[in-house]
Image (tube, rainbow, N blue to C red; front, side, top):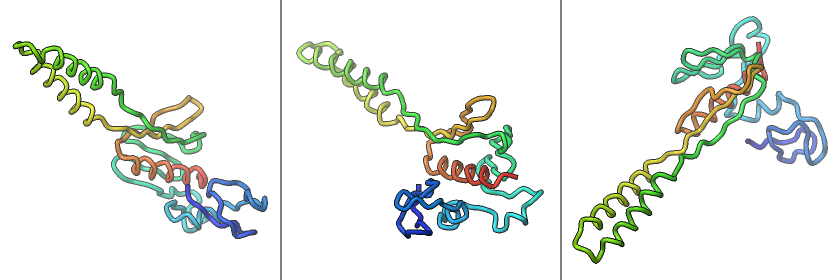
Amino acid sequence: MALIKCSECGKEISDKAKICINCGAPIDISIQSKETPSQSKPDDLNQHKGTEANYYSLDGVKITNTRFIVENTTYSVNGITSVRTSIISPNKTGPIFAIVFGAILALLGYNSSSNITTIGIILAIIGIVWLLSLKTWYDLRISTAAGETDAVTSKDEDYIRKIATALNQAIIYRG
């Protein structure tokens, strides 16, 4: 979310707002696009009538004002009703169980001459490494008449945000 200035009162408001929360003035979409540098739009909308305007093209993802292409799947921008991003947190149950169970084994075998302590320590270390290797995933979900689809999933949050921004712009300036 970026902040823009209201053309009526000059106060900062969200670029997603439809009206100014301070004075109630309607927010013009063209003002929103001009003051949000991270979003792209065609220079001249009339110039792109009947042609595809490219909003994003990188790593197997291409977004134009008419199509959203992810590797071998093509979605019509006209058919997309909403775009949202979500966070997929990793399941930490397994590594936490390994750490706790390893610690219990290490403590139980501490006074004995068995290898239980060594096994417990190794299990706890494996659990710690496993826990540290878990990464959060980010997801771009689109809604169409056919339902919701996870279109793109990545460990790179910025990558997902750039695609979502470009797709939202393509929806605004549909062909």
